[in-house]
Amino acid sequence: MMRISSARVAAVAAGAMAFAGHAAAGVIWSGTSGNLAASAEFSVVGDILSVRLSNTSTHDVLVPADVLTGVFFGVSGTAPTFTRLSAVVPSGHTVLFGTTNPGGVVSGEWGYVTGKAGAPGGLHYGISSAGLGLFGPGDIFPGGTNLQGPVNLNGLEYGITSAGDNPATGNTPVTGTQALIKSAVVFTFSGATGFDTNRVNGVIFQYGTALYEPSYPGSSNVPAPGSAALIGVAALVMSRRRR
Image (cartoon, rainbow, N blue to C red; front, side, top):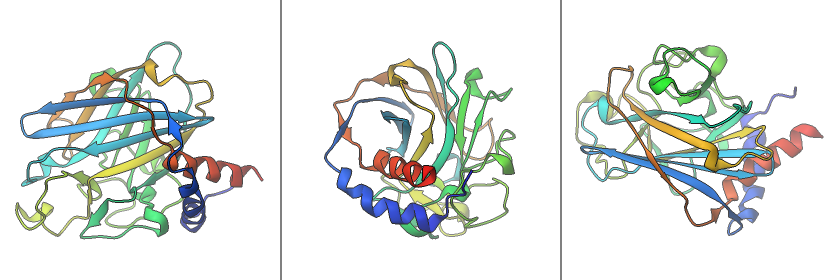
């Protein structure tokens, strides 16, 4: 299998903007717990599953436990085999106290696991920027470099701070020592041909750097069709890989 470089992802990302305005039906799961709020939007175009994870809270992030670091989800019926492709900071969002690979790629800072014992709620799929005792070096998304910290997923770096965060306030880990994403990341996977996003039957949002830190379930609603531009990025990546 050909390795996807961050430069290649960036190059096809520019072309994928032509997809903006095209529609892709999907499902949004969202939830709140106190000052915490998050959403996960699942969309499919062709073979590509896109999961857009957002920290939607309007409250300031003051401690690491306010930082969204993962999402776990399950599906009804036979569990599909998804293959991780990329993690990208979408247009309109930024990295505080850090940088990205070209094209907003942060793949080297996020991981994906399936079927892990001990996952919250017993859910089959997990995505995280922190190790949480579940994610190892072999679980990291391809096509990016290690942008901060150890090669393994560890600590708070590249977690998702809130939409309402004031980066000048809070304790040290959330005011400069750790790169944080404000306030969304899009993850793409191949292997989604024929997958109905309505089969997603459970979502848990995870915060901080350990499973004992805040987490809570989301609930689902079917959104109106949205932009498929970011799914187009992954579709173009796949087409380049197959050539």
